[in-house]
Image (cartoon, rainbow, N blue to C red):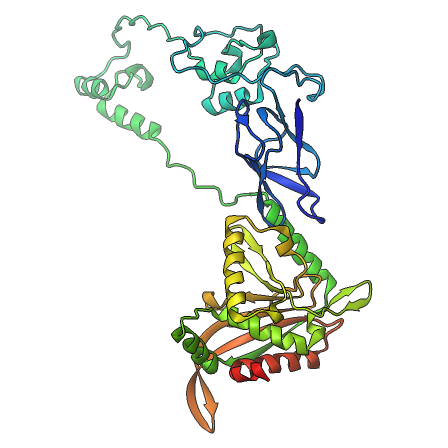
Length: 446
């Protein structure tokens, strides 16, 4: 029985999706559970599987089209099943099987086989292929019902070879020319009649003609290019604007001496425990957030919602944007558990396979630009959270310790906070506590 495939609703907040890629073609057989198409949402790309067996009979939308959730995108049915009712009454051809390699192509046609203005009825896949190959569908005979042009009709069509033109009798040029001009014109294939000389053509007349017909240099590439935002970019733009309009923000910066953290990481490495600085920051900042719950809350309808758990968001950069998957209950997990989970989340994000539940429910976010050498920046809060911590590059700087100038690996932390609920003094105390933990790892046991 024919089944209409719709744009799935992949999350509570999803309102539309973009069909970024069809993984099957019209006419292909498909089984339940097989990958059918890819959907790009405001957060990630998902591969949608077929939920029925049959043949792909019709696509309602092309690749790159954005449609609301639950809108129809395709039809799967039996090869010979009538789906005209699902198409709004238009007749539809059954999907034709692939023609065998030895099948003879339809007779070639060099002239239109339809009257001028006559409607050309063709399967969508046939139209698409004809467009790609530059074939005029008016020249293609249709073998489907009522003369409908199928995909195989386009595949097998060949233009009739053009009849060879009769050789034209060589005529002597009407324009007189000097012997040198006549020899040059013959060598260069120039028609002396086009030179336009008054009496007879001279060699200098040919030079002037060549100058006037010389090809101009190719035009410069366009100075501007307009590219529509994809689904993820539009969502980022919308969320960033919403955050800016919602929260009156302040950013505070504080430098931290990372000498102790470097030594701590080396000690772990000696025990074959390999963790990144991001892993360490998630663990240490989760500890600080349990002591400063106001930095871990959210605001809803003029109410402060305190979270007695830390779901730490870690921003992951992608080729076309970024996502913020969460490490749930980061305050209760070990460093190795956090490290393993962050690696898995980053891998899933870059492969487009992050489940939606990993993108919801965050309470605080860390965003790291240190690998790009950034020394300070102003991160934007990931709503509905009230704070976000920017991590910058670690670099050797000259600092004063005990009255002496020494070199230390320093890192600047940039905390952006929502001033509706977090006062500057509270933000400063939180940063001081993070600094104390990073500079004295043993305090994690206190």
